[in-house]
Image (cartoon, rainbow, N blue to C red; front, side, top):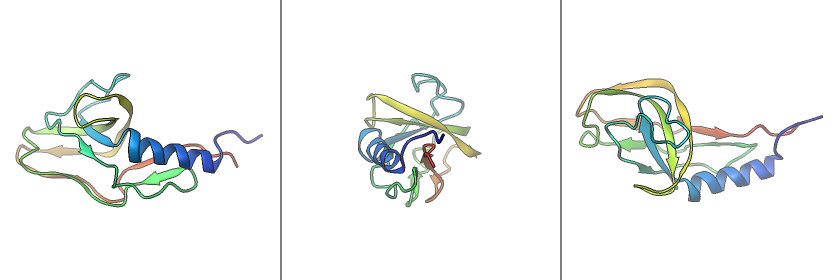
Length: 127
Protein backbone atom coordinates (compact mmCIF):
# COMPACT_ATOMS: atom_id res chain seq x y z
CA UNK A 1 0.00 0.00 0.00
CA UNK A 2 1.33 3.41 -0.94
CA UNK A 3 1.88 5.93 1.84
CA UNK A 4 2.18 9.68 1.73
CA UNK A 5 0.19 12.62 0.45
CA UNK A 6 -1.37 12.86 -2.96
CA UNK A 7 0.74 15.02 -5.26
CA UNK A 8 -2.06 17.61 -5.42
CA UNK A 9 -2.31 17.84 -1.62
CA UNK A 10 1.47 18.03 -1.21
CA UNK A 11 1.71 20.76 -3.84
CA UNK A 12 -1.07 22.81 -2.23
CA UNK A 13 0.51 22.54 1.21
CA UNK A 14 3.95 23.51 -0.06
CA UNK A 15 2.66 26.47 -2.07
CA UNK A 16 0.69 27.80 0.90
CA UNK A 17 3.43 27.10 3.45
CA UNK A 18 6.31 28.77 1.60
CA UNK A 19 4.58 31.39 -0.57
CA UNK A 20 2.22 32.95 1.93
CA UNK A 21 2.27 31.56 5.48
CA UNK A 22 5.94 30.96 6.35
CA UNK A 23 7.60 33.10 3.71
CA UNK A 24 10.55 34.47 5.73
CA UNK A 25 13.81 32.51 5.96
CA UNK A 26 16.42 32.97 8.70
CA UNK A 27 19.98 31.59 8.92
CA UNK A 28 21.31 29.45 11.79
CA UNK A 29 24.71 28.11 12.87
CA UNK A 30 23.28 24.81 14.23
CA UNK A 31 19.90 23.07 14.36
CA UNK A 32 17.20 25.69 15.15
CA UNK A 33 15.43 23.45 17.68
CA UNK A 34 11.72 22.88 18.24
CA UNK A 35 10.93 26.61 18.53
CA UNK A 36 13.29 27.79 15.77
CA UNK A 37 15.21 30.01 18.19
CA UNK A 38 18.40 28.02 18.79
CA UNK A 39 21.67 29.10 17.17
CA UNK A 40 20.31 32.10 15.25
CA UNK A 41 23.09 33.47 13.08
CA UNK A 42 24.69 36.78 14.01
CA UNK A 43 23.27 37.85 10.67
CA UNK A 44 19.69 37.58 11.90
CA UNK A 45 18.10 39.32 8.90
CA UNK A 46 15.12 37.29 7.67
CA UNK A 47 14.54 37.34 3.93
CA UNK A 48 11.09 37.35 2.32
CA UNK A 49 10.97 34.32 0.02
CA UNK A 50 7.31 34.64 -1.03
CA UNK A 51 8.36 35.33 -4.63
CA UNK A 52 11.45 33.08 -4.58
CA UNK A 53 9.77 29.71 -5.05
CA UNK A 54 8.60 28.04 -8.25
CA UNK A 55 5.16 26.41 -8.10
CA UNK A 56 5.24 23.02 -6.39
CA UNK A 57 5.14 19.97 -8.62
CA UNK A 58 5.15 16.29 -7.75
CA UNK A 59 5.25 17.11 -4.03
CA UNK A 60 8.41 19.20 -4.30
CA UNK A 61 9.11 22.92 -4.40
CA UNK A 62 12.39 24.64 -5.28
CA UNK A 63 13.58 28.23 -5.26
CA UNK A 64 13.91 29.80 -8.69
CA UNK A 65 15.67 33.05 -7.75
CA UNK A 66 18.68 33.82 -5.55
CA UNK A 67 18.07 34.77 -1.92
CA UNK A 68 20.74 37.31 -1.00
CA UNK A 69 22.18 38.79 2.18
CA UNK A 70 24.36 41.85 1.55
CA UNK A 71 27.85 42.43 2.91
CA UNK A 72 26.35 44.92 5.38
CA UNK A 73 24.00 42.22 6.75
CA UNK A 74 26.77 39.66 7.28
CA UNK A 75 28.28 41.34 10.32
CA UNK A 76 30.08 38.44 11.96
CA UNK A 77 32.19 35.49 10.87
CA UNK A 78 30.35 32.19 11.29
CA UNK A 79 29.27 28.92 9.69
CA UNK A 80 25.68 28.76 8.40
CA UNK A 81 24.30 25.22 8.66
CA UNK A 82 20.50 25.53 8.89
CA UNK A 83 17.52 27.71 7.98
CA UNK A 84 14.18 28.33 9.65
CA UNK A 85 10.89 29.60 8.20
CA UNK A 86 8.75 32.31 9.82
CA UNK A 87 5.49 34.21 9.30
CA UNK A 88 7.11 37.64 9.66
CA UNK A 89 10.41 39.48 9.19
CA UNK A 90 10.74 39.74 13.00
CA UNK A 91 8.83 37.95 15.71
CA UNK A 92 6.09 35.94 14.07
CA UNK A 93 5.44 32.21 14.23
CA UNK A 94 7.99 29.49 13.53
CA UNK A 95 6.93 27.15 10.73
CA UNK A 96 9.81 24.70 10.28
CA UNK A 97 13.49 24.32 9.57
CA UNK A 98 15.98 22.47 7.42
CA UNK A 99 19.66 21.95 6.81
CA UNK A 100 21.88 23.60 4.26
CA UNK A 101 23.38 20.93 2.01
CA UNK A 102 26.84 22.43 2.39
CA UNK A 103 27.86 24.57 5.34
CA UNK A 104 28.60 28.16 4.38
CA UNK A 105 31.53 29.75 6.18
CA UNK A 106 31.37 33.55 5.99
CA UNK A 107 33.53 36.36 7.31
CA UNK A 108 32.25 39.71 8.53
CA UNK A 109 31.58 41.87 5.48
CA UNK A 110 30.97 38.96 3.11
CA UNK A 111 27.75 38.70 1.15
CA UNK A 112 25.87 35.39 1.20
CA UNK A 113 23.38 33.83 -1.20
CA UNK A 114 21.24 30.75 -1.42
CA UNK A 115 21.30 30.39 -5.18
CA UNK A 116 18.27 29.65 -7.35
CA UNK A 117 17.60 25.94 -7.08
CA UNK A 118 19.51 25.85 -3.81
CA UNK A 119 16.55 25.40 -1.47
CA UNK A 120 14.02 22.58 -1.82
CA UNK A 121 11.01 21.59 0.27
CA UNK A 122 9.18 18.32 -0.33
CA UNK A 123 6.75 15.72 0.98
CA UNK A 124 6.61 11.99 0.36
CA UNK A 125 4.01 11.50 -2.33
CA UNK A 126 1.97 8.30 -2.54
CA UNK A 127 2.64 6.35 -5.69
